[in-house]
Length: 319
Image 1: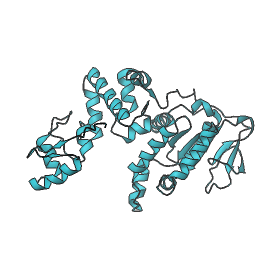
Image 2: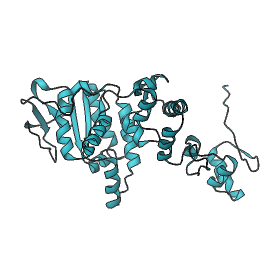
Image 3: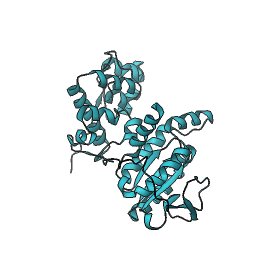
Image 4: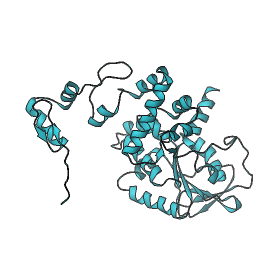
């Protein structure tokens, strides 16, 4: 018979042993201790930036994080010696991807929505993000450069955009458009410019609904159809995570943006090579970028479009 070794959890107060962490946590009531009191008393941890004790909020976060806020992580990365920062931030990726059994390095939106430094921090320390993650045996989920002058090149005048007949709020383009029933997405190109690339347009509330428990499997099936066709779907959201948070508060929605972003990350890995989410921030930017995505097609399938769009919009805002 195969011998199974069970992990034992020992109470630091009375040394009593338990087979599960949940049982240990229930037991702490006998000592009149909350989880926060127990762990900060027996397993104190110091903030890597300030040296102050780290507060206990959640078990995993307490032992995985060395800062109270992401802003503190960013500040430490800016002031600590580069070799120390480099080793530490590579370790963050290595531990995260190992825990989640992922074989690609995080993408820009993932880094922004998780407790990780942004991509530019890795570029500053190592020269390039690709070279940084190569040191730990990974490559980026989206590792190609943006085509030159992507945001400014002149599109062909004969571009014809197909708009799905079920699209409820179609965008306006300066090109010929025709209604056509599409099997996937809301937009693609007709004729010689067809690039096996599709765009699914969504508002912030649409994204909430699509990734809800009621609709999630249906959307997975749509992405599976994209994969079987050896095609690609850009999910372009005419909002930002920040705007979605404000909207949820205003309308008192139960939907949690962290839950939505987790599903965005999960789907990005599950359908790697066939799917990418892009928060454009507005209908105007969606109308500008969608024809370019469709025209460039395979040239941008492996490009972290959110990273380059965010930088382009930042550049415009500073002009």
